[in-house]
Length: 451
Image (cartoon, rainbow, N blue to C red; front, side, top):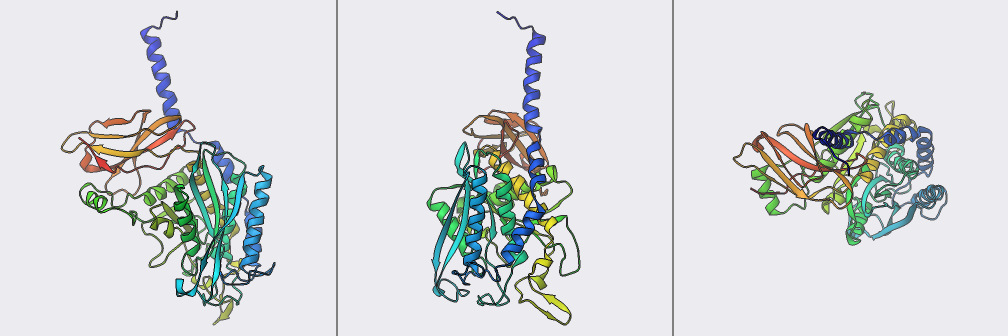
């Protein structure tokens, strides 16, 4: 029988605390490896190939092997299948499609199938939990109803589609606890029909979606205003889900949370990860669903209550967006390959890849997070335990005017904790689950109160 002295017991306790602290604070060297493995050359090849189909308008040729949306989606599917072959058939590749007619929208000139190309990398522990990266297959000319004029769409959005394919190539070399979906969405320019179709497909199949990272234009560094910037990029996220209930709206009025919806937490997660692993980059949190009055393919997921953000360049060049190829008054118009910076596309692809990996390696987020401490000197939090073998939980808090989580405390594998001396009135709070590999779930804002 071993006899432990008080000093020995204290030493073991300290060792346990140190181990927990190490798990909660660690970085993962695999994420640096993922960043290095993203290839600008591969992105260039894919962007040039996509632009080379002439036009990828949703209503363009579907029969030709060299021109039109049909040739483009078949090539994308074959590339996903080649990636899957290289990783031992680790991707389930398929078409997901919906039929549209002119009655479905004012930008639909004729009946057509809106076809998405989906590649699913199944998780080892939580196969029904999905984190999604999307790019758009389709392109457009000045007139979105014109499906015959050349519209190479090199940046909008061959860059996002190429980035999605490249992320699949890199991440397919790893195993993840949750599933990752790489998808090319169609019908974006006609009314976000591809995203709507896949979001409804996910809901009908009871997918648990962690979030979607929608990539739309990730290759341009020269703004129409002349600013050149190869470090900054924007993360658009809406403040609260449009599906919130009247009870949730009333709670926000009294308890706060106007900027703490699930999409905003996803944006904060991405921002934090980039600052940790890619400090040379400048992620810009934009507190808006999308650009002013405009929309992207994350919105249909938001509409159904799923977390989703748009990742894109910081400085747009409107001469290269939705423009017929031409020269007027010495100004060159058109979304051609020459306007894409492949090294910048590499950086933003890496931004996506490390966040897909982190979320897919992380445990599920805690559920039913509740908060207490009204008219008390301390703040209390409690939550339901996450299924699985985790290291514990981390409590986050911040000033009510702060955009990012400022403070945190790892509290171990428990389901209730009191922050002594932290007054509930002066901060916002949240809880994340921490895996034994150090990866964290998204932060969950309290949805209820207790005393």
